[in-house]
Image 1 (cartoon, rainbow, N blue to C red):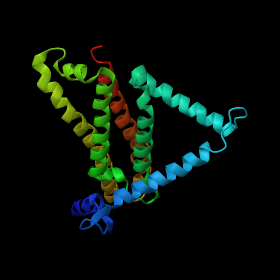
Image 2: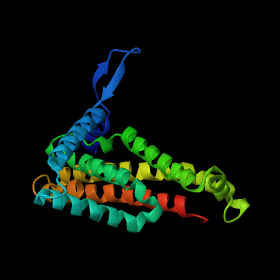
Image 3: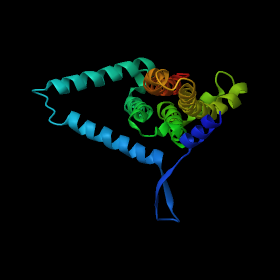
Image 4: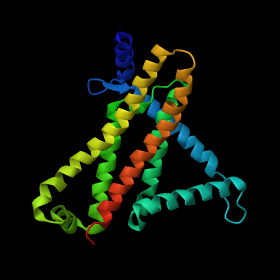
Length: 231
């Protein structure tokens, strides 16, 4: 058990890679550096996939990419509703980032989602978008009035939801990543040869992708609720 606790503390510790020498020193954490790597990889991949596009003579790569983008819009459109389709690019971006973050541990990097600062930032971005979508779609007056629906007495509860939602999104993502790590460490202590490798297929790949989907799915549901309530 002491070995597990020590390993857990070491893995959950937020390491500083380097410090930017301005304003007294700004620490740059490992999760930030890994995020930069993910952004760079995704950016290069996008450049490679979208170069030499043609309207008259589309290549097979372009047709596959267009079909994939169309499928994404259709998939999220069924969840988020017609009025929320403008937010699909954000949802897809978050889905790709979280999925890669959860899978990147397979090649030796520390997943950024093991840093609670990252999950908090993702949750805050999502909740700001959720509330902003309601303001944009309904207007400030109707948006504020929606907190008193279906009756004024539950207004405090509706306001409290603004703070509960990001906390729920954050702790769900961080908690599942932490839980997967604890289970993997226990398996390594009990059966250190075959079982951890098999369990890794689930916790590092399947569960990582599921958590990315759940985060984005809940965000899309909240956006749909925000833009379609009380019309």
